Length: 403
Image (tube, rainbow, N blue to C red; front, side, top):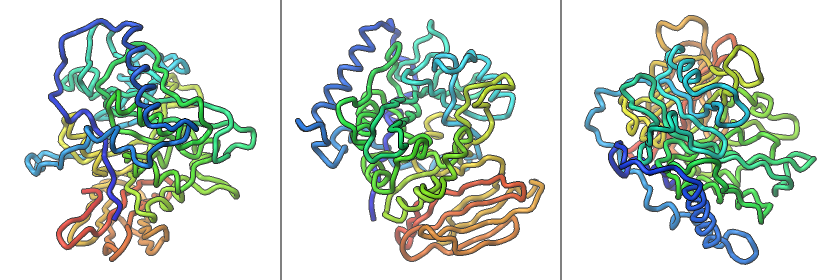
């Protein structure tokens, strides 16, 4: 069985602010220089990866196993892992208005992921060393984050026939705070793997949990690359980005994001699927409104517990369906819709990339396969869905997947 390295620097220490220090251009230059130094050490003279394994770069950020203590305090927590505000440059919304929108719509947490910068909510308040941008007791938990954004021309493998390419990776909960815009991208190689590897080098400097964003935007992603990225520590992939529904679905020449996910899972990759709104526009107009997709995490209402649950796949993704259970129990995957939810539902079980059972109703269960994985998709009659994470039979006493 392939074992994934889960990256999460935030668990290394207490969630408390270190002594304040000024944010200066020199801080950006220092982080950028370190990213380039590590990147060059991992590259040979031809510009291709010198090593198949990024473990040496990120080995110090492995998450410890979850303790059983406090499990009784776990609840379902709704959040978004892909949120933009004015610092992104393509959103005009102030941070306070963004936070107000998600708090008003009963979210429990968001990750602020501005393009190529780790934004502070208040420039007078230094949160370096923390995984959140304000006191969690203030209400909505606001995680630090960044969308590592690179839009090159001429990626290999080829995707868009015009050569346009998108390499976008979110880091959830980074503890570093380089002031200003971060320069991290690989510009010497056209290989997609090298470009994504540069994002993982940045992750090693900044911290945080990596999420591949809208992987089918302008095409070019394939199962082999997804498996490679999972091997190198990536554990999250957007399977339903509401801002890019056309690309999620695929077309006659390109697989859907779900099909890509299944192809990588069938090859043994450990990847958890997220849904997001990728929100930029909050005033009732614009191309990228909030609220189109989210995740629901089973965890204590505490920042590190939420990120631990994300890293372990203890969540489901949704664009409208509310679940009550998404649980491996006694070598079965058990799925149940919220009993109070209106509507008619179909629960499809996907086993090793193939739909093997379709059940009309709010509750269903499926035995775990002897080899490979099973996951579930719950569909309401209006087309809204929830995606349950893949579960594998690891041994007689150990089950991998959502809880």
